Image (tube, rainbow, N blue to C red; front, side, top):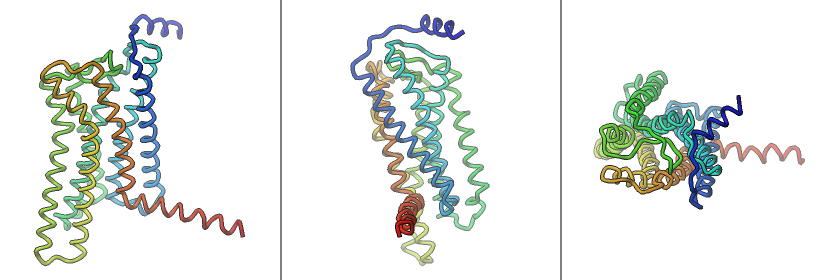
Length: 311
């Protein structure tokens, strides 16, 4: 049976000429993705074991981290397949290639909408502090489940329209970059809509907090509003990291509307996207005070545990 599978693979594969930079780029990509996965798992583990992290705001942050972990895992899987094909110098579309392509768009969308959900939570906390049901665990869980389900469904048109195809030069299954209704729809749904709403929420909160400074407001309320505004500002920074380092894919996306993108465009674009995920996780650790405090608490406890033994 194994022999038949191997023979079938050989018949369906095509020999290709690799560029000298393919394998080093694959290894660099895998290294960045592997480190991102480790950081994301550590982040989620700290939230699970530390009681101070078991809050509703941290639950929303954990959702974004899990979306980042999911996206990184799919990218890691796709890069392993690319590396294998590059080492063998073959172009081979395995049976799960289209599925990986679909899940790349799904998990990428979940990441952006996860940040949007954080921004919405901060906005509701500041502008509608008395609507406690909107800040409850059940309501936030409902929004998280709704977010995951809606992205899975709304990305289906790419799959149903057969827009995801195996790109031989890039050793990956992705949507063909060309001017079409599905392509424009995907760009708006995954990137433009969540990014625009996050920026809108941030500007609205800035105006709202400035307005609070000009009227009589309880100190606790003002401090809380400023804290949530800072949180949304940090979300904007995380999104900007993804967008700035993901600029090549945006450029190639626009080129695809006009003419044929350059050869190996997805290889070039995705290396920046994979590096950006590592920067996002590092920044998330820096921005998330409860997780930082939990880590520092564990590090400080270590010497205290060793001292009695030495005495």
